[in-house]
Image (cartoon, rainbow, N blue to C red):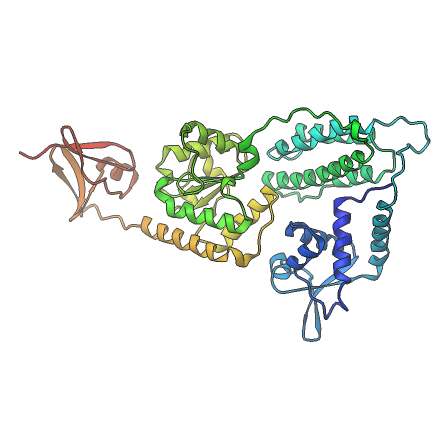
Length: 471
């Protein structure tokens, strides 16, 4: 018996859902309706199947305005699939395809036959042994997501999986054909390394889906006393649970909280899937070594979003976190607020950064994170208000950081106790070395009591200025 692949089951469910109504004009569908009818919770997977079926001329997708039919053509996915309902018509050349899927579904209900090779002589690997080989390969596939396109590790994994399947299924098997098809890759000559890596991850996901189908089919051939002995999987709670790490300065708590709220609404993530150390519900566990735990999690998370602000640029901890992530060649998304791309230096200047002051770029961030996590992006209406809140906070930070620098004629050095400060009229004090060398108009902290009198601290260079009571 040939087992249907997950993609085929979804295609059949879409076909059945489309045929429930009296006709395409009178029966509109939405992605959420299709999700309920097909049982597929991943909205992005449904959209991908619809687009694939349309490209293969098996269905026609359209919307209606009055009596006029408007084909999908090249409409943006978000505009067509996620706003109002649309219609699915079965194309003439697609009916035979769906009829075959219906037949396969019926065949799966029939009693299963013993698996044999075509000539009756070829000895295939036992189902138990095959499962023991394929299951760890599925588990280990997650560690390939950070590998570049065409890396030796990716190729070795693919060749090993292909060899195991060839020894587990007879030639001509749909499993073998499906795995071969999953390896097909399409890319543009001008794609960046990051774009190629994402394309490779999409192919990897398709190959893993075939392996899971193979494991399921092989499992049907085992008796109760033949269950495979699987190696103990090393647990890594951080790897399993932590999806997103938000690197930020504690002074940007409001901005970090806005990003956290946006991500939870956009992906329906649970609190323990996001680490944001300044935001309640996402802080570190009590009693842990803070530095050690953050150092572990910044490379264990599937996605790291770095909030790049004037505060974080002055924070050695944030720069360390982002530098560690960059050095590990893992997915890193710099999000700017109050900082322009030209203000970045070092490794961060090599990365494409997005601005939180641009709503389109915030939506791009969500799309990129969705692909990286392989997670379903919820309806835009569920998180649109959080996009606006994030932009508002970023705009405020940008406006606050753009302060007109006083002219040199306005600046004067005044001595306060034993310390020399810059003042601009009645404004100040400023750190004289930082103002001269870096052009930073940052106020010093208010006076703090210390054993010798009072002192202030520069938040740019972290230098203390010690004042003593005037005589």
